Amino acid sequence: MAILLKNATYIDWQSLEFILTNILVEEGETGKIRFLNPGEDKKAPSDIEIDCTGKYVTKSFAVGHHHVYSALARGMPAPKKTPSNFKEILEFIWWTLDKALDKDMIRVSALATAIACAKAGSTFMIDHHASPNCIEGSLEIIAQAFDEVGLGHLLCYEISDRDGLDKAGLGLIESEKYLKKRQGLVGLHASFTLGDNTLKKAADLMSRYNSGVHIHVAEDEYDEHQCLEVHHKWVVDRLSEFGFLDSSKTILGHCLHLDEYERAAIKDSKAWVVQNTESNLNNNVGYFSSKGLGERIFMGTDGMHSDMLQSVKAAFLVGQGFDKIGFASAYQRFRNVHHYLKENKFSGDGENNLVVLDYDSPTEFNQNNFLGHFIYGLNSNHIQHVISKGKLVVKDRQIQTVNESEILAFSKEQSLRLWEKMKS
Image (cartoon, rainbow, N blue to C red):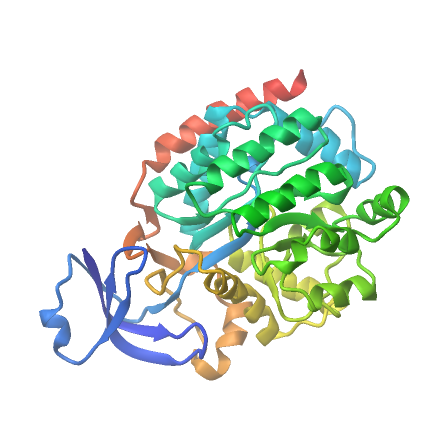
């Protein structure tokens, strides 16, 4: 099956060149796109034809750090105790929520998240999952949900000692079971909830499957303070000693409270950093700065939502007071996740992942001022069609692959069940 995009203005996502053309989009993980010569479109073997006159076509987006498990949190009742610091936010909100998750809740959370990602233009999602009382099979549940919607994914289970060594062991088992059959990462919560024995086992697992780790790093000062007090070293040094920074597949989440020495160590490593500005604001943990970290930075949502265009705007605007970030560097971080996926040969983010933008600007829009429009103009409301792996998953802003209304009705039921369980 192939899709023909007629009369499109294609925006090359790397050069930002604007090209008026007809585009033939092949289906499949390795499907290509082909620009057609005048008249060639009449002979093109397409099954779906979309008139893109006045529309813009470019590479779709990807979420660099997500938490599917947060999908049912929107509007939930206040916790039993009002948190006074970041550790209590985790204890009284997120660790209470993740312990209450079961298979139905995980599945509908993944489906709702995949739908939201697709409608916001993202066709690939990197997720960091936790469900301590429903570990076995949880990653495959999420993977199948994203497969149903038609999106690419790179998953991991959040291994942690916080619920006991038995649960940490189950997390390791789930991770290995998943890595045997699908692309993925070794998920770790954060240094302050992980003992050396679990980190050693995670390092061995990473090595056996030629993978990397996906871990929260210095999101709050507590992570650093605890590491110094208990392990007598900085968090980055601790992770480095286990070899986690030696893999180009490793993702370090947040990286707020690092000193110059740690920043230099990350810059000199193979690891990537993922920035999550809105989550940092929500948890009042501080402000991201790229100072000393190098260029291997991409962006995520940290489960706040699934809209990467919203995330990059927040990063740019907040960064004016705390970070060295401009139009070009904001766009580069927004797109760096594609380089991460390509560098590490992960599948599902090929050139046949596209968005069609219905962006009728009141001002001139071209290669020379694209970045200004990207920051101040484009948003998810302009996404009309989304093509994932050559398949039309969103048409005229409506999801095509699953029944959205049925899924959202079920998610409402499951959210009420979840909230009730969180009271106990």
